[in-house]
Image (cartoon, rainbow, N blue to C red; front, side, top):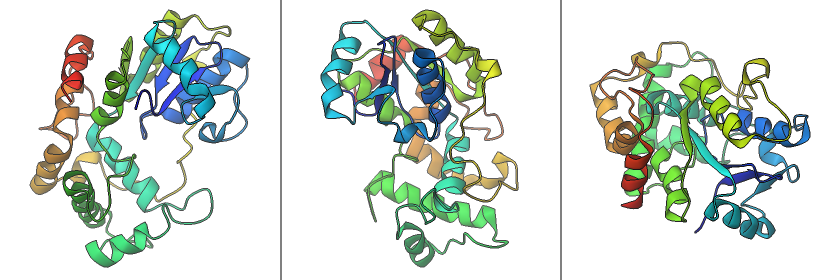
Length: 268
């Protein structure tokens, strides 16, 4: 397994475990800028140069050596589970993707047929989202009618692969406090080109894919929805310190306890 989903700067200053729906586009662009003094022209997920990516098999030994030998500053970014799955719903289920079609081809028709969701016109966002939540639970808990998608599978699972591969994080910060978190990483890494997080654009590659969220986060989650969230994301709430009881509180209770996190993720 080693380090799937990991990007590294070409200079080897930083290694980032990508977590979908957690500012990964902006982070990738910051990494690119920190090496080259310019942003990548396009979606950073498509970049085949300018970053070292685990998906390129020729780069895997380079990433493994840097991470395991402690030559890179290793980090990731996490997000409140309530806000993250809402983002996945509006982007991947309701939205039209960059190729002009629906995400994963027949996924949305399957959801319409089997779960009764709606995604077009003036549909009831809350009702459709709660039906999508049942589908997400089925994929995570029972892996049916398909395995869970990376955009709504638990954050602890993504982060845990890095630990299982023998890596150790120096920084784990929150999307909700992004500038402070990435600034600490940059200060530690001291890359070739300085980056001011407060002065750069946010590269939200999914923005505009789908309809805008019409209600506050908490309105989408009734008692049953919260039960499903706990079933799916109990470890995310516990490890990263997010408030399960109050969906309107998107902030974590405090910094991630890295020692505790590594211990819990090492246990699987």
